[in-house]
Image (cartoon, rainbow, N blue to C red; front, side, top):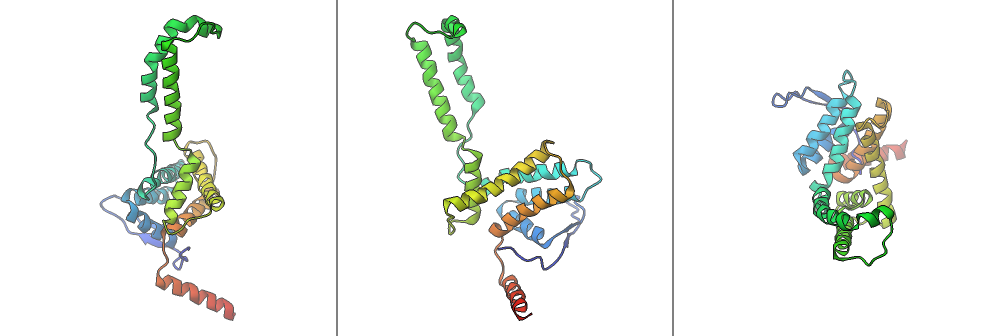
Length: 235
């Protein structure tokens, strides 16, 4: 549930330790900073970095810098919310293991490879290389989960163990997360041109998802919501 923005904005005071000047932030952003800090201080610092960049319009790359911090936050978030990520696949190391076998194959089979024609039965050199290739690609699929799977696991972890979305709804929410990530990645890599208005819309979408999943409304806020509803019913 979203916490209503009872305050339109607040100020983060100057921090002499970090040199960060006072920032004007929304009530939702203030709540998100606190929620992220409970998970990991690095995450809250990334988000504060976003807000600093967005309030530095004299920097011609301010949107790029903000996008970079948001993309990093989205990539680092899973490790701090109990997402069971697979072991990283060391592709360079595994290729180095394959390379000697490939060189042996080249020595014995170079003519056949050049002609793309194999008449004689394969020998142990080639069969060993094929076997190692099979292990390579099996492990690659096992230890390199798709981004879609990573996004779905992130949404599930943000929801918590008590909430288990039906697969179609989980996919829909993961697709929203994916679209937000893709936008910020494109801006961060100078692959997408944007402006502060569009950027703000994507940032708001990002904040909305995190607010719904990371911030539990207090009783005081819930009472405020009830009062708003009652006033609406009476008017």
